[in-house]
Length: 339
Ligand SMILES: [Zn+2]
Image (cartoon, rainbow, N blue to C red; front, side, top):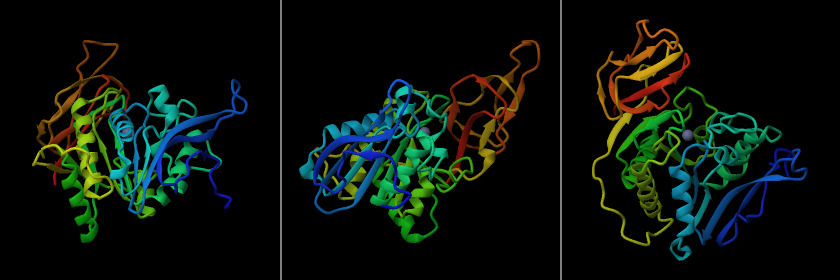
């Protein structure tokens, strides 16, 4: 056992055939529970030989389409149709999920900004470390389901890495074609949207795990269209990967995927000052370069002229802020360019 072995234990045997539901036991000794742990639900289904697909939701605790779809997948799973292994963690940052918050109430850390995590770290750092050292090395594929959380609302959108290698690109395009999302945005999965490389996609890549993610709603609620995209896409890709044969015919294909790319900071709008925000764009708008994203009003002086905020680049609006109240530096939304 190496010194880096996670202190998170589990009652799951990853190598056993059959369906197991159990927990990851995150040590948590606190005033009200001296010998306690936080029990993070996990399911592992294995049947014979085949690839391992890691399916995650709730990396942020206020995003719900992934957790719903993943739990339903496990509840309805017909093991006889499985060839390989599914590792399903519907709410990876479980303390955040229980609190309904993006970051953990224990340490206020955003799980997807703390990879590769730390063995001896805080609760969220320990979870990241477990994913990096125990789950990713066992996996061939990772599909990580997100939404905009409390502060953002997204059009249901698959997010796909921008590979230049033709073979990687081909595999990815076949996956996207099978998932059949209304929108796909190609992005830098190593450095995420904000230029940070402390994200799960970077460590999936380092573990040679095929990685796709996506934003399927937001506003800390369930987007029913986004949920349908997730559920249909999940069934279709598991069938495409020959891991899980569908129990019922796959839904009729949408046929048209809007292909977009996020490759420039000018596609984002940020609040330059505190106040409250009146948006001048809506999700799904084609926004021209230099267009007004919205106006920021002074909270204390209704007679002051509002401060205009512009998008430097034009594009298709995929994301908008939900909260009107803003601080300087808050994201007001973003566009994506045609790919
Ligand atoms: Zn998220």
